[in-house]
Length: 440
Image (cartoon, rainbow, N blue to C red; front, side, top):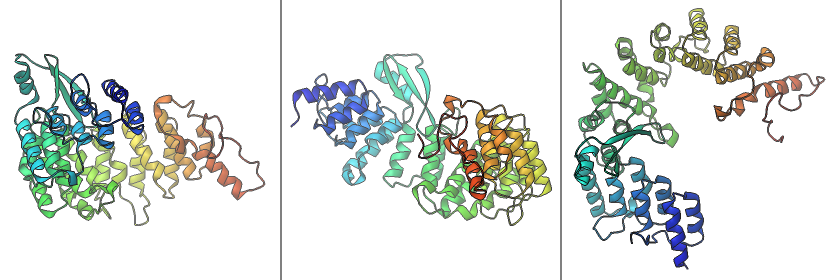
């Protein structure tokens, strides 16, 4: 049985944004719809007012009702839409089976109404204050950005067009291609990394139909490069087809159709997306596009060169491609060298020049590039990896998860022992603060 003290503790944990403590209290029997004594509203409303996604998600996960009708006629879900926070709406969105027809129409109508007014204008309406709102650019969980706008002590996010697009897709409403494109281009800087752009591209990419492909392809010769960029993004989404979800990728075989567009495209942002799409193509006839990429003045384009170089049926690189790779490992841009290293690390062709290129990258200024270059040598059973490993140095703490490549030399030495059992066995991984599997 939930006690009054349990409710107070839960409300306090919600106000402090302590999702872990909230889960503990809910596990112990606290009610997820407990009212906050300060407002009289369910604690879920407090989490929504604070735009606290982890807390709101925990409460809904444990049974808080986002469709509960509140005294003012709204619901927690409608209030989440009002914040303009896309990820907050996702956090409190109920299972579709719990959302009856009238509630769906009410939700969409509310989202459409909020999407008609920009966040800054809405803040002026709510506060009655003139002037410009303060703006803070933030990044969401998948790397898209949005803005928080503040005026008169109130804060809204600028994600209402993204929210509308996401809700329409979730509720299986087929919004016209051109309307979704207009939403994507509505942000003043027309930036493909904004949430609104991302939601429009995702909604269209998830359709996986020929009509969407044709509408995007029709924009390939549009004079506005931003329109072409949106089309290229949609085609990439169609080709990729959400592989992480295990869904089919019916357009994977059509990626090669973008080659003529890539060959004539001059806008760097658009070309960057097209080249990304081409790397997904099966049995691609590259027609020298990798060589041209390697000579491009922009490093974003040069970075795609290794994946688009000409190779024979067995995957072996020809002399020109190998010469290009050696040029890329000396590229003045560190990102180009890193991307080249990543490709070389996973290339399993027999060309000795690949090992030489990896050895050169073990002297790179970036430690992470050196780590992966050493690993590439080890994966190729190149004995030079042992000496090259000494150039890695103490592992920098901000590199994240790099254990597998750091263990590559240790596993190489183990393989050598298995082939020559009379050799002295390798003990602990040399010079590292980590250990092979099973050793502590």
